[in-house]
Structures are given as C-alpha cells and as structure tokens.
Image (cartoon, rainbow, N blue to C red; front, side, top):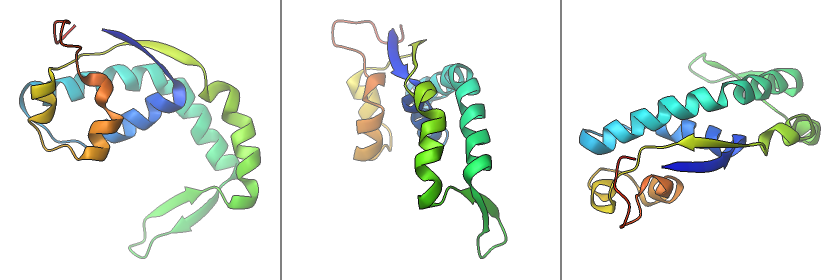
Length: 128
C-alpha cells in the first residue's frame, strides 16, 4: 500500500520503528517499513543533521556520551533552514498488517497512535 508522508513524519517514524523489538509478521512489517523509510529520508536526515551541527551546541551526559542540541535562541534559525525540506512529501510503499496483528505485539498506545498507518483497511489485503 502506498502512503504519503512528509520528510519530518518519515524521520519520526524511522526513529520510533528503530526502537521496536517485535516478532512474527508485526516484526517483519516494522523492519521492512524501517528499511523503506530510511531509504526515503536519507537526504533529509543528512540536511537536518548538518543544520543541527551548524546551530547546535555539544553537550555531555554524565556517562560521558556526547550529543548536540540546538539552544532555544538558535532554534528559529534552525527551523528556517530545514522548513522547506521538512514538508516535502514522499510516497512510500509500506507493508501493512491486520488490526489483530498490530495489536498482538507489545506496542504502547503512543506507539500505536504514531504507527497506525501500518494497519490495513479491513477490505485490503494485509501485506500490500
């Protein structure tokens, strides 16, 4: 099934899908969709990461892990730099599952809300 999502929505889905650990058909759908969305969002994620490096400040967690965050005062400039690209829509061929398969895993209600696009309409054949 083909769906349209903008680059930022795809990136948010990639971030969530990458954290999930499901098995069976739901796990397969998650990994297949993750691969497709990673591919579709590569250029946008590179541009966004470059903007984060440009406007961000490096910080360090207590365990020594470094990360970069965009401070509040530079956030408008950061958003201005990526806004046109963030809203570009892509059509992605996603793998869907039935509602029963979707609910059979360990997804939280927030995760389900974000990933509901993975549920096939009752009249559709899941997996398209």
